[in-house]
Amino acid sequence: MHGRPEKAQTSVRLVRGARARATRSHALPLTVTMAVIPVFVAALFTHATGSGAALIGPWDPPSPGSGGPSAKGTSSAPPATSVVPVPSSSPIATTSRLPACRYADEPAAHAAYDDWQRTIVDTTSRLPKGYVPPDLVPVSRASLSGGGSIRRVAIADLRALAVAARKAGVRLAVESAYRSEARQRRTFAGWVRTSGEAEARRFSARAGHSEHQLGTAIDFKAAGGGSPWTRAFARSRHARWLAANAWRFGWIQSYPSGAEANTCYGGEAWHYRYVGRDVATEVNASGLTLRAWLWLHASAD
Ligand SMILES: [Zn+2]
Image (cartoon, rainbow, N blue to C red; front, side):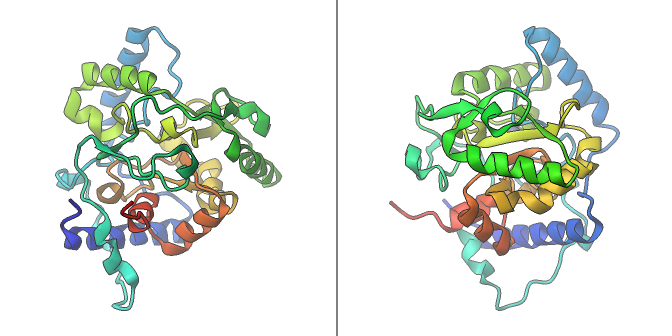
């Protein structure tokens, strides 16, 4: 099921290239095209008005035009200049354990509640039916504005992250946190109605496949600001601060821009998953995306 090691190696090179670019320029690379933005805005509006609900993180938010699952969208591939050489001594060969992007409903590895740091949730792996984290608490306990809940285990480091950001002049808030499987199903269905299933899958997780259901994922935004799925947020100091510092507090950006073939989703400058400081430090040092790291370290049990 893992197949195509050549593909995996290419993906990792692209990720490393993207990170190197971000480090140099302190700006996240964007491949959003102006042609797609009106479509996205229209879909957003239709969905919001159609559901009658407040539009608060109804999906794993879209990053229109920035690629998506699988390598089918050749137009979304990063330019060749983003590819950096990888030394032959690099342990990249081991990333052949990273499956190519596809859609399935296979049981997620390490899906026990206590295995939250290692649980693999992607377009292939889904959480078990009835998966509801047992220790959800309001994110307000982390002294952050915005609603929602996350697992208690993440609160202390979320608060530490918020405090550090504030000291740096970056005031963060929570756009979206835990989402139930039922809510994810409704919102994905809404996107299918407005955009068609193929397009919806490029930017939205199917029910059971969202990291938000883990209770350890947060979509951040600027305090007092609007929804973060915009070019403006991706370029903001909030996004830049998070990209540079969140890992120090145990939070990893799950879907960095330019890594679509690796993460199976377009770039999401706002979406972070808590994996604890030790794992986050390892992930950051590895240069891998979180998905690649998790697959690399997944055991067979
Ligand atoms: Zn998210």
